[in-house]
Image (cartoon, rainbow, N blue to C red; front, side, top):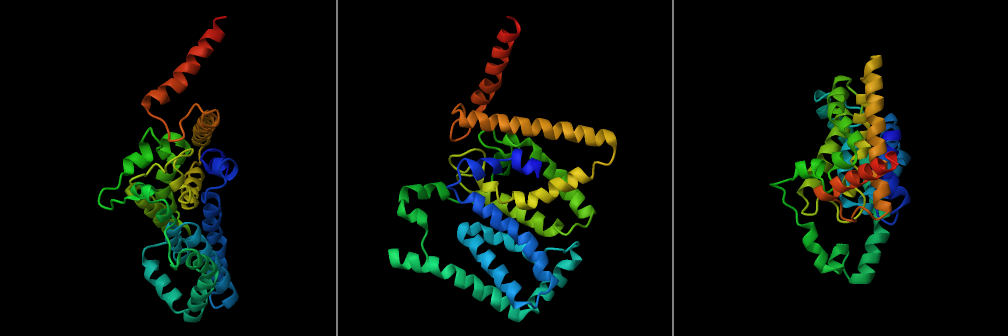
Length: 291
């Protein structure tokens, strides 16, 4: 939780730029975790199905790409690939519950659809069509996803801005080895989000602190981070991990302070800016030290 709050841009979008959809979107996707466990505890409950359908619909309305969060629900508790088919059969057998989920979701979405129809005459509207010149930002190239740019670019690379998230990489291995409840669902959600973001022409997410498009993926990524932390059994491993996490969080908070002081551009940074951020402070520290 400390890594998520202070080592990523969740803190920024939950406090600084709250007018974006991402804080609400993150909360709704995260809400699917306890709701999924609750639903599978009694899948025949129509009340539980109605609540689940409402949250799924709100999540989809907030950001349509959150439809990928269905993987969190469907595969929650599945600990092996062999259990995937069993889970599909288990869910499909609950026909009444599925019908309630769909009906509850439609009921939640209906007011928004009605507003669109009242305002534009169309039931389905892309808000970006209102400002057509923004559409070129959303060109999608599914054949050439820029994974390296999303993760490692100086401009707004996820690992460059938030190095503590590197713990997600070994976390996938540890999740599957521990046969954790979120191993399959969480991993699918993270990789699907990464693929979509990497396929955007504006993969960096326009303006803002860090890559805001990747924020929802942290719901699944959190379990990967937790698995990496739990795998540190020996004392020297815990100390090393604690030092790495502390430095990563301090670094991310430092970049956020630069953003708020307007030293960092609204659209990210380049190599020269990255060098200047640290060289200038080294020079200032050296002058202070030599007084």
